[in-house]
Image 1 (cartoon, rainbow, N blue to C red):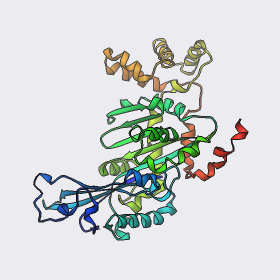
Image 2 (cartoon, rainbow, N blue to C red; image 1 turned 180 degrees about the horizontal axis):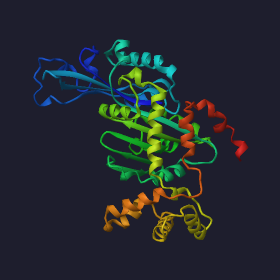
Image 3 (spheres, rainbow, N blue to C red; image 1 turned 30 degrees about the vertical axis):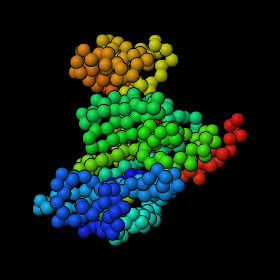
Image 4 (tube, rainbow, N blue to C red; image 1 turned 120 degrees about the vertical axis):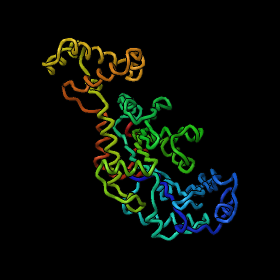
Length: 387
């Protein structure tokens, strides 16, 4: 469902009645007749403190800046960034449902008022969205670990996509993400991230984890529950619109319209599809021996020549001990064209059907049932059955 959201409000959509709550004070920015000089682009901010988060008090991050409108006139713009489940539940293990929209907007309006920002309910509901993060927590109770799933995700040659700037494989294989200038897709071990945050907030994937560190003791008692999190972070309004056109989603980019589980599901499944399209059949096929691999290549691909058969046989053997990225780097002197051609050929081969290791991720995205920690209390606390 929806997690983090960024709303950008223009003049007239909000009123700041306590400008000194901002640092530096918002007075200078709000005064249109003042001369800012070199301070014209210095933002005024109001963020939750670590003490507030540890005490369970969550509030959005506010940034007030000067922007120039279409007339060339300076205008104070307010950016509101927050995790909606952390606002409502105090954590983002629990996931929102459509029925949570009114409680979320009511609480957000109240929290903004406490921060010295006044906004009408209708304005908040129809506030323009400039960035949005859709996410799903995948509970694993059958012994599967996030580390295993992330290792399978890493096998996808996702870095070969033209719009991907970088991929990161961090925290000893407990997180993997690919990102560009306008969006990011991340998979990570949710409980491991909480553990990292307890040591240092800088080592965690998420921000504001101090709010939910009290859950760490609860999760220490677990035996069979693991949680892998998938997030799609659309960081620019233009990217949101572009993706929605691709998916055939017709919706104005407002808080009320994007607070929608169906849209969240479509976005997450789209990127899972893209991920799995990059994974080769060779990855999931587990022959009983090198000889059976060769036999299956020949039997299932009768029109494939000897040279190509031997090439793909060797590629499978190499993949069993080397990651695609490592292998590509080893062969970098031969040029990208040869590598692309080899990978393209590997995508066309047929092998005995095997279940994708990411099937459990697709299963949860297809059902799209909201995760609630209370549903897993038995898994976390009744540990004697697993001893």
